[in-house]
Length: 325
Image (tube, rainbow, N blue to C red; front, side):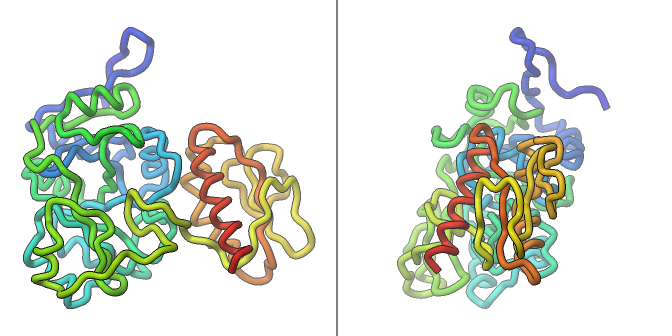
């Protein structure tokens, strides 16, 4: 495959702008693990293969995202969502009414769900939606895999509603942006948590009144766990205590290593010290070590730079949660 990006004046690769007629090429890039921004009716999403740990980790890196908040996973229809999450009667009614459309549902993750644990921040739930934009629909059908897609901008910046906004934010950080013109809604999707009593986690184009007409009274979001983007709380915390900045394991501990100096580690997030690889492995490795006969998990020091900031944030939250349990 020809390189999709062209060298820029600073020596970095420039992000390619694709026409709607090049959806097939965009789909090939996504299946290959690359990042491609694409239009939805709400804002432009920064798309990556949600089943590919490294692609999901690359999303966090491209956005300079300081925490592993859950990402919204996009699928072309409710049928494509069913292998990933468990629907209840409320979810069925909402999907029938508002999908495709600007509504994200947070639902219990299926045991056999193939979406990366990193995309859901290691939680037992998943935020999922069916976008209405025709280009997004065609792209999702062509990829035939769930696509994780937060807004295509640097973390904390204004969300993009045009391809030029994406270029201004992410040029050289992603391979391509699929130009579908301006977004019709221009506001992020409403996020509704259905893992318990219905609660709006993020207001958006679908109003509380519209939701109440389908599911009845809404509850206030519960504290503790962030089940959607834009919420501050801890993520998946292991049952066993985490000991951070460890250079070796104590008796009874598993050792989660990082880098070439962690010889003898039970598992190594990245033997070569690659932070993107480490982020991709983080949640899966924590789950593997959170079991007998281990009484605790010692974690090697992680550099406080790039994705290391997000990894350390996650580890500190997990360690604090266990101590306060």
